[in-house]
Amino acid sequence: EINNDIYTLSKELKTLQKVYPHITVPNRSRYIMPTDYQSNLKFTLLDGTEYGTATAGAATTITLAADEDITEANILGKYIVITGGTGVNQIAQVTAYSTTTKVATIFAETINGEWATNPGATSTYLICDEVDDLEYRSISEADLAYDTQRDEPTAYILSENETYGEFKLWPSPYRADTGQTIYVVLQRYYANIMLLDSAGTLMSLLYRRWRNTFVQGIFYKTLQHKDDDRTSAEESKYYTLLKLMMSKETPLPESQDFVRNSIG
Image (cartoon, one colour):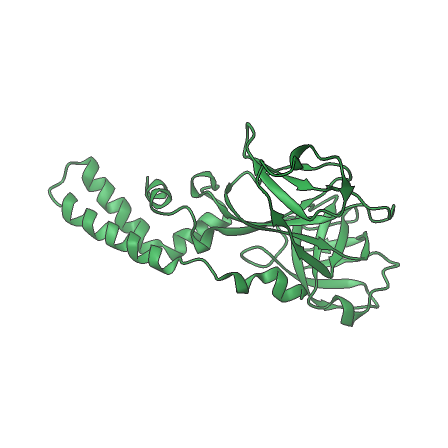
């Protein structure tokens, strides 16, 4: 009930901002939204010339391919995306690298900075050093949904489906380089609090940040259930706390976009 109260007051809270890297498939334009998707912030196309298959991984590291020849100067601060195999659809920033052992130390885009699923010997990766924002287009514009042009995507459109919604890229992803056939589309979005795992890390973060609000809400709703005389007074306290927390949840300005700042 408290989650629903928060959802009713605002669907776009700073704490609920998330990122998700979509791994494109050559010649395919349609992609499904994340299962906790609420509303979109932006789509960014990530690309790079360094890619391969990892040989190992741990909570905060990934061991790159044995023949990986990238230098320390060219990888530090860059984002690495797991594009296939174990741990696919994860993104992290490289904070340290050994050209001898090929071990990259990372800080992942999770609450604790660790991989949600450790990569392994089957994990393919892309080191991103190019970034371009994709342009939004409406469904009514220029038959984008049905255009058969293939090239590097420059635009996207949003549409609904029977699950969580979807987006379409235009042109359909394609490149002549047979070694590196994919792009990564990084989606920045607001999660739907009503769809979050109640035992997940993001919900746990909300419980910590909003602790007083949740405690007061449980107290008020318990009194309401029991038809207690104190209900009205405690309801007022609860909604005061809700509004206070909402005022602190102003979304970050666009200039603080983490991808553009880190990749350049």
